[in-house]
Image (tube, rainbow, N blue to C red; front, side, top):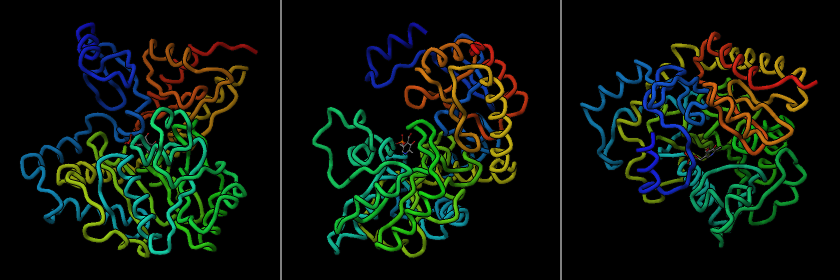
Length: 391
Ligand SMILES: Cc1ncc(COP(=O)(O)O)c(C=O)c1O
């Protein structure tokens, strides 16, 4: 451990502050260098939705690895074609563009909207305060949080920020330059805050009335995490474009966007590109992820397990005045604390349960979608042991 720490300290830029070194993973578990076992309720921040080392996933990657890894998008490749069709069928019914990360996916979504509005002189995108869309300059600028932008000014222009779940504040920002409204179905990094049906329906109606695009960032909510393939599917209306990444590759980097048929041909030859996006290897990994999700009924399982785990957490905090509620959907859950969650996060880690803070006062639980009831019980026992009854 000391050796890894030293290497990091000498050679890795200090943008993160990890405390443990992980070497292996299987299902809902990971192990550190000393063999200590942890229940992984982070899923690598909503990435390993089918768990670590799933045999179907390993086999698919190994098979493609020995066949064809990369040729660039100058050529057709079958896995990309198949993956685009699969994503289209579970979402908006249009076409896809593949990238490599969430931020890059959102860049593509922003570019699509700008290109669509360009001839009419429209480019401004209304995003939400407290949102998170990535760390590239444009996506950090789209992110409605000062702390993400501070020190990097001047930020790229063209983003204005409305209050999340406040339709009036969106209306007030619309002007002749507005081209789109962009939001997350659940603000994950912002504290596991779900969007309200009134807001989603209201934004859709506004977008229709003013001829604006409705953009949904599904990077954290997508691929079954919330109990639907995509977070927007909990509501009665559809966005025009969505972005996705994280869980699609279960750890193999892949992201992208998909648009409804009406906007599927906005990005034409030469207008957007990436060397690595949609390689045969990345797409084979993603196809295996979608197959496992379908074969094992993981999207429905997220609903069932989410309810079970939420009920368990609510029971634990019933007699506790430090924690106020549990929020989220499916298996993207936040335990809300009145104070900073850092001490709880550390205690849980020590006792073998990995979680992720979401903002200063929310503990996020993001287990794999195939987490067993026994492992949820084990996690609840650890939470129980770390949360003193104070009422
Ligand atoms: C909603 C959302 N959008 C975008 C991103 C950025 O994704 P990436 O870190 O893959 O660039 C994240 C990452 O946490 C996210 O949660």
